[in-house]
Length: 129
Image (tube, rainbow, N blue to C red):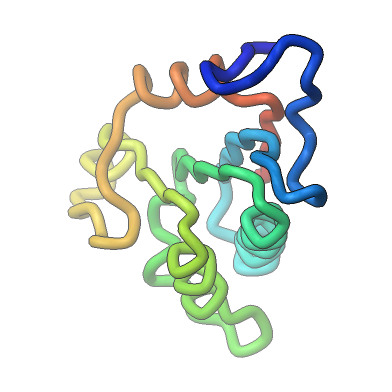
């Protein structure tokens, strides 16, 4: 596990409940299935609500989530909630270009180098896809 600069020797990083900084999560979504994306963003929102730092990386078809429309799974609402809570969402630039899409304001374009860095720095990596 990577030790934070502000972390004291012997201090456990899983301390969100006690009011101290929590874990860092990298959440990778590789699906545009509304239920899968909705559940991934629910997980990410719950983690941020508990004091954890969460970055979501949209890969492959997941870069299309801004356009998902499902009456049963309100992806736009949960995406907005996650961003409002302070979560970060990044979109694979190559995946966007392959689809001739531009990055959305809430999901800026990113790179594989950034995804590598996110997974290197994360305490936990969670994938949905």
